[in-house]
Length: 498
Image 1 (cartoon, helix red, strand yellow):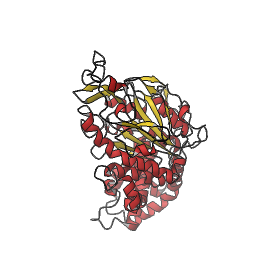
Image 2: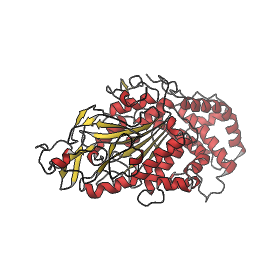
Image 3: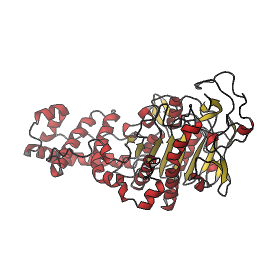
Image 4: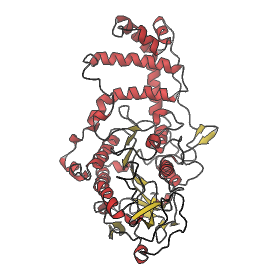
């Protein structure tokens, strides 16, 4: 069972620290006009010697939390590209010639399955051309002209399945291993298990689509019953101004330099004293940690977010100057920069929740799918190539995933409905074989046929690459030893290097 975080040690009593026994509100009201005074400075200096050791111990504990892995890790950091809405496999990476032969025939279920938004229509062939690419001769849709050039690098899971056809539960399942809220996402598990690589940037960063959050909103990035500090830090793209309150308001010139430093030191003393009597409140711990991280980010974040430091060649490769690709491109580029500077896990989301601007193509596959594919094709290709050229794939894992697939049957003429029966995921990078696929769907692409894998298997495999046995990484919650993979999962050794 995982070891809980150490409590903040009790502070020694003194004339100065006795004032800190009062609530923060009482202290603030009683010290009006005195924060910059000699008395406040004396109180700060008297207590800081006692609190600095506690602060250092807390930081060190988090940095090395569970750093003793179960076996030597191959992966130190992860980027996940998540496609919101359910990508159609038979229109992207799972070529189904049978759909052309059976096009127009009514072969779907007679009763509307759970999660379907309408009764199944006739079999519908893909409106896109497929061709073989790479040394492996993998079939790829014409929707991905750029990615087809690097198609030999990833390992494909061709028979993923989900236990539900409903967006919310399926998205929870792919992120937390459970269909209901309240459980930690696997980014939080990674943060908890491995701790931080950098004291200046968040361990777990989420870069959502600027058009909106995915289904379940921030529940997909939650720490659940883990300490709240392990939840995802949600950042709005590449604009450093999107980080609220990172810098003092320019209107208040006094809140800079030494005054800002002294204020933070005093607040640290107050916060730690306040937290010492509330050791079970992980949200309070998270807020204190977030404030300390924000102070460190004042130096690190502007440089990390400054994409102008990248070469014109890099920008051209990612497509940051192309209206169709620029948003996803900038977030992919930022993800790489964050990993280089110490972030462990970055999620980049494509598409918000809702009926438009995502991969939930009920209305028209020919009209709705191409712009989504176009928006990610060049950026994700450049990201994979860039990681490789910089040597980052030696210890980085890149994942492409979605919550479920879509039916081989038409909906409303030329759309496709939800289908958890089978969908595609791919992985590339450290410890993963190149140019391989595992699993197979049936001839229509409606159900898995061989080598079925589920989210539990994917999560078990990721944890294995990070150095953990998924059955042993547990936390006691509600009287149960909880784990990311619940009571399921196996490592997919078929796609891993020996």
